[in-house]
Every structure is written in C-alpha cells, then in structure tokens.
Amino acid sequence: MELPKRTKGDEYTSTGEYPELRRRIRAASEGLSIPAAVAYAFDNRTRLVPYFYSSHRMAPAGARAVAAALYDSGLTKTRVVLQQWTPNFRPSRAKLDGESLEMLLVSSMQIHAERAYRLIADACSLPPQDRPLILGGGPKAIYEPWDLFGIGGDPNISADVVVTGEEFVLMQLVEVLLEYRGAGGTMRAAFHLARADGALASIPGLVYRQDESFDSPLVTTGIQRLVRNLDEIPHPVIGYQLLERPHRGRELRSQPLAASRIWRHSPIGSLSISHGCKFNCDYCPIPAYNQKTYRHKSGDRIVDEMRRLREQLGIRFFFGTDDNFFNDRSSAEQLFDKMAVAKIGGKPLRKMARWGTEATEFDTWKNRDLLPAARLSGLRALWMGLEDITATLINKGQSVNKTEELFAMLNKVGISPMPMMMHHDGQPLHSKEGLYGLLNQVKFLRKIGAQGMQVTVLTPAVGTRSYEDNFEKRSVFDAVGTTPLLQYQFDGNNVVASTLPKPWRTQLNVLIAYCSFYNPINFARMLLRPANSVGLGVVYQVGSMIGLVKTAIHSARWSYRLWRGPITRRAAPSQPKAPMIDVSLPGDQCSQSDGSTAIPGSRPVGPAPVRGNASDKPATVPLRVGTESQGKISASG
Picture (tube, rainbow, N blue to C red):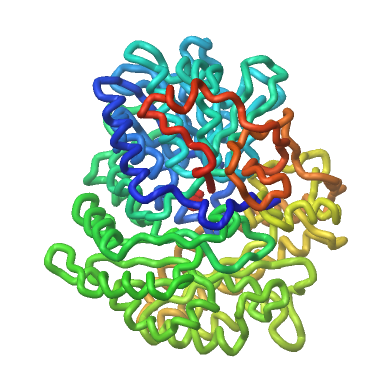
C-alpha cells in the first residue's frame, strides 16, 4: 500500500539542518579511514526498449547522490559501482587503497532486486569479523525493506540496516555510528553497539533487526522527514568523480573513472531538478513517497550544475529526473530566466548544454506560453505520461485535441514531444472507430509530431494504492508453466498481471506498437520532416530500432510462454518475513489510523528506549522527539 504521510507542516527538516549535519560528520570523521562502496544493482535482462540506451549511458542520480553525501561529509574513500558497467563486481574482494570495505551500500529498484541479493550474499560470505556494514537503499528498500533480510530464507544473508528514505537519513545514521566507532573500531561493530544502546530509534527512516538472533523481529523507526531545499544537497559533480570505470573484473580499480572520460561512458547527465507531482494516480507511488509535497532547486543552482558538469566533465546532454516539471509555474519560470542569460565558456548555455525532462500534458498545456522561454533555456525534449490519450485508463487532463495542439507548439519551438503510453486490459490493439486502440494512438501520435515513443504494460507497483487490489482480483501471475515470476519481469516490458484469457496477445500488442513507430519507413519520414527538433527524433529512431531486435526476441519468447501456460496466480502480495515493530517517536504523526509513521505492515509498540536522557545526549547526536522524520532514486534511482 501507499506510504503514510506526515502531518502537514511536519514533512521537512529545518532549513540548514542537512549542511550542518554534514559539517558535524566531517569533524567527527577527521583522520579516520572508512572505505565505502555504493553499489547500484542492475539486472541486464531489463535492458530493453525504451531503456536500451539510457540504462548504460546515463549514470543513475541516486547512487551518485549517496556517494556525494558521504564524500562531502568527510568519508572520502568512497566509490560508486554501477553493475551495468562492472557486472562482475564482488564486494568480498573489493579494496580501496589496500583496505577492505567497511561499508557496502546497495541501491536497488525492485526490478534489479535479484542482483542486489547477490551483492549482499557475496558480502555475507566473508567471516563475521571481516564483513562490511551492509546497508540497503533505493526503491526496493523503501517499499519492501523486509525483503533484504533473510534473503532466500537464510538468516545469515541479510543487510544490517535498510534506509527507507533519502540521503539525509543515511547521514543521520552515519553520525551516530561514528560516535560509537571510535578510532580503532568498525562501522559494523558500531552499528551493533548503537542498536543495543537504543541510539537508532530516534532516526526516522530505518529498518533493522532487533538483535542478531535468527527469529528476531524487524524494527522500523517510521517515515523520514524530507530535505525541503534541494540546493542543500551536495553538488552532483562530486558523485560523478567517484564512479568506478567500466571493466569485467571483480575488484575495484585503484582510481575512479578519469574526469576526462566520464562523458564517454555517461554522455547523458541525470540531474535532480525537482521532486513531486500534484496528481495522485492509483498506480504511481511517487506522490506518496514525496508526502504530497513539491520541492525544487533554484535556477542558480541548476545553472551551476550544468556549467560545472560541462566544463569539468564534458557532459553536454542532461536529463532532469523530475516527476512533473511544470507542477509549479513560478519555479519553472525562475529556472528559464536564469538559464536564458547564463553562459558556459563565454557562450549561451543553450548552445553548450541541452536538456530534457518529464511533465504531464495538463501542466505543460497550462504553461504553454512558457515554451519559447523553455527553448531558450536549452530544453530540447519533453517526456509526457499520456498513458491513454482518450483518458479511459486515467484522466490527467489529457485529450486528443489538446495533444494535437500541444505537439504542434512543441515542435514549432524546437522541443521534441516524447509521449509515454500505457497498454492495459480492455484496450484493443486496433479499434475501427475513434482512437481507443493502442495502434490507433501510436499512429496518431506519430502523425502529429511525436519524436519518440514509450509503450509499457500497466504493471502492479509496490507502494501504490492499487497494488493490493490486483492481487484481490487474482490478476497477478505467480508462475508461468513451471517457472515462477522473478522481480525483473515487473519492468513494464512483461505482461505479469492480466485478467484476460489470452494475455499473450497483450504482450504482442506492445511489440507491434513499437514496430509501427520504430522502423525504416518512419525513419525516412522523420528525415524529411521540417521540424526544429528532428535531430533528436532521428537519434531515437536509430537507437530504438537497434534495441528493438533484442526486445522483439524477448517479447516473442515471453508471449510463447504465456500462450503455452499454464498460468498460476497469486492471492496476496509479499508479506514481511518477520514481525515488524514500529518504534516511531511520540509526536511523529501521520495519516495512518494508529498515528505512527511506520511503514505499512508493522505494528506500533511505542518508542524504543533511547540511550540516556535528553540532557545526557552528546551534542553531535541531536535528540529528535516529535519534530522530525521521512520520504528514488530517487526514484530517480
């Protein structure tokens, strides 16, 4: 189910709290050597259209942000390991400057969970005294934290602690652990001491075992509090300079990827510009994760990020990991104003940097008068979640006429419209009348100027209101034939839930839709189109036609398996592997009926004992009673 929301006015940390936290950690960690690796789990079976290119050519923002926070806090022996670049990485063999890892941070989406399990299992293969402190994070940890404990039914294969929020929660944890670590200890030993002393209960956004016994319940400290001012987050250039260079080896290289070569491996730079969306679709977890709030960076900060990444690392193309860029008009306007007059290397920013982002059609249409200013800022592409232009699946203010007019405006000013569609039960491949059919919509969007196309299957997503309903309707597959479904298959490219008697047709429908858009004929048409943004469309046509080969093979195989069957279905979603205890502090109120800020699936037991009295707490570990807590990747991954 959805994550709970904190009481209005209690969603955020105080202004300046995050930079001050990092300053205290820098002071506490001075002179200490704490090797850490931030590993981004990646399952290569998900490398299909529409993610075929970007999955390997755009370093994820989430893992970089975590590493940047550690580095900026004084833990300078930190490396970012992307499994799509270094698939054979083994934490048990990793060393930094000749030292074994003291912290392993595994970030994973649900679709990459099987690879995250392997990373954790490999680290757990070390003797207990040599194991790093294992921390889980990312979307998988946020919505199903219990799944990173007792992996495969083995209580010895577990994360030590799971962070169910953003970097601020992690850094609160690091501050407490540094107090317990001392000069000669380890972060894992410090974790055990802090846990036994009750020192972790006052850090909202954690899940950990109550103790080391095999049948120990899991403790949740509730929902995190969000950093309101995104300008307080460490600069992304820090995280980029900590990337492990691509290789096939198992160990870490002596030096990170050279700054001069970063743009070759990540020509697209992902930037966290804003978080949040005003819509509350029942199949999307984003609004609840952001506690129905909207946060954004200032125009000056975004200009500085693009300038430094362009000048220092050579990155020229950027993608904003926004949930809905035009969600707030004033923030969009101030960004465009700053970028329109900004310069990089003495030249206008729009000539030195190009960027794209995501927005809803409703808000883009409402702010359509800003499109010329958006183009002057360097905006070249806009991804829009249309889902279904007839608004049958979900009504987010989209319509056929509005879509046609908006696409014409976007192409006229030189911004590529990139629609994202969602195929669902009940939608036919083709309809004789109207535009309800999937193929009808794809062909219509191509004719009115779509430069790219994304078509995915409506898939149950953890953390959404509709998630449990899919199981109650018995639409979610448990196994196809004798093979159980794996988590990588919940990527939107596989039909894994359907009430239709022939779900294999739905799988083929998506493939047919892609082939109708990405093909040599449309490639030739696009070359002749007199649109300002035709260049991006050509790039997408070429890249997607290449990726479509692998996608077609994958879709054909899965369609065959669905056709052959038999298909068995699940009656309920995954449940916590152990009892979960909510120790949210009094006053950490939210929208749950029991008033706790715990994640769904836990039971409140009142606050756990906190070490000492408030007056006895060290100044470096602020007591958070009743006024703090919750909330991607980044989603952004």
